[in-house]
Image (cartoon, rainbow, N blue to C red):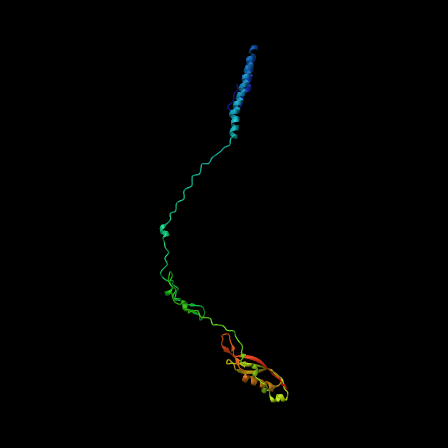
Length: 248
């Protein structure tokens, strides 16, 4: 018989010795009983061991092998969103334009410079929301029409310039002395087309020929006066040359 003390230790040795001593004192015919008793003792020990392992070690092994599982409780359903109802009064709200005109502070003047002054706008004729913009803003008048522009023109001879000096104008002394040459002149032309001045800018080499050229051209030449960019007649100048030559 197997005994287990309070600490769980085995005490089978004393029991086996006691049983074997008692069996040795019997008859020879009692050996069969002794063998049966030993066999039963072995079976009891085996069953005790099996029971111990099954109830202790095996149970602990199985309990340690089983996983520990934990299931969280299901989440509560979400709360429904509040329903927003349209505000009928707000939808029907209208924006009103004030009847009062815009105050442009007419009591103050706007100065752009030392002498430049802008007249303030009269707010009496300025309305918003279907009104008209009346009056002249800032005292401005109608847009001025731009003046036409002209291409400036120089003075031009009027008629045949070859008739300004003829063969009869050749000085007698110059013919006798056989004087020839080229006289270059710059003529001043007034706004009326007449010659206002004569300047010799290239001499023929003979003063008498040069003086004759200025005198005859100034008396006979006529011009279409010069025109400025505004289309008005203006004073100008004209350059010409007179060749003095004696022929048979």
